[in-house]
Length: 395
Image (tube, rainbow, N blue to C red; front, side, top):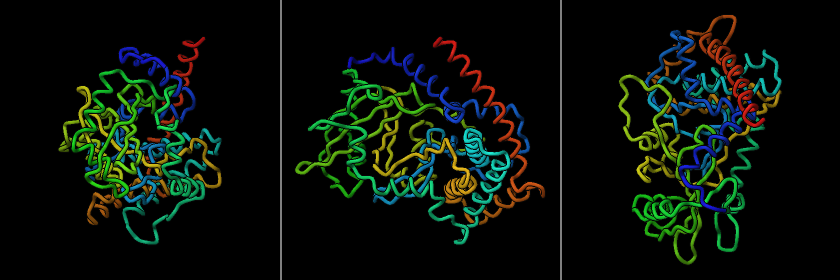
C-alpha cells in the first residue's frame, strides 16, 4: 500500500467520518460532541444544577465506558476515553450518558416508558456511588455487561495480536485501518520511544524490568474513532527486553482543545495532552497511570499501551429485559469516577441537590428528563439531515 501524504489524509478521513456518523443515530451522537454542548447552551438550561467543580469525562456516552485493566491486569468497568475531559459540571456527564442511553433505547425499539425508567435508575445508580454504602454497589452488573467483562478478563496478548498484527516477525498490516507512514513520521516515532519517559511507559506494565531495552518494530497511521477522525493517530509495535522479549502495542493520539465547558475558576494544564492525562488520573486512575503526554511533529499527543483487557461496550442495541439495569450500572460507574474526587461532605451536598430536583411524579429530575428529551429531538433531525446530505454526495 502506498503512503498517503498527510495533506490528502484529511479529505479521506472526512469521508470516513461522514459515512460512520450516517450508520446510526447512536453513531451520530458519538461524533457530535461540539454540537451537544452548543445545543445544550441553546436550550438555555439555566435550571441545570451546578455540581461541585471536578474533572468530568466531557463526552460521557456509552461507548466511552467499558472494561479497563490497570498495570496489574485487574479489570473494572470505567470511563475509557478522556479526550474531552475538563474540570466542569458533573451534570454534563449525566446528561450526555442519559442522551446516549435514550438514543440506544430508541434504536432498540424500546417503549418510551422504558426510557423514563432508565433515566430514573440512572440517578439512583449515580447517587448510590455518592453514598458509598456497600449495599448500593451494583456489583458485576447485568448479564450483558458481565459477559463483556468476563471476555475481557480472559483476553491475553494473543487475542490483541490476532486483531492487530500478523506474520512470523510481527508487523502491523497495511490496509483500510493502518496506513504506511511518511519517512518523517517514522523518524519521529523512533525518537519518541527513545526518550526516558516513553521507555518507562513501555516497561511499567506486567512487571517488566525498568531498564529493559525498547525497540520500535513497526508503526502505522491508524484510521480509528469517530469524533477523533482527522487527528493524528498512530499504532506502534514495540519489542521490550532482549531474550526473551515481549511485544506491546502503543497508541499515539493527538489531543486538542475540548468542546466541554470548563468551570470558570478551574486551573487546568494548558497543554491539551497534559490535560487529558491529568483528567484520566482523577477519573480513571488505572488508565491515567498508563498514559503520558508528549509532543509529536509540533502537535500535542498522549501515549498509552493497549491492553488486551480494554474493551468498549457495544450497546447500540439494548436488551429489553436489561436496559434499566444497564442504565443504573453505567451511571454508578460514572458516579464512582466523580465521587472519588469529592470528600464525604461534598458528596452529601451534591446528592441533596440531585434529590431536591426530583418531582413526585417522576423519580428522574426534570432537568435531566427535559434535557434528554429536547436534545433527542434535535439530534433526530440533525441525524436525518446528515444522512440526506451524505446520500446526495454518494448518489
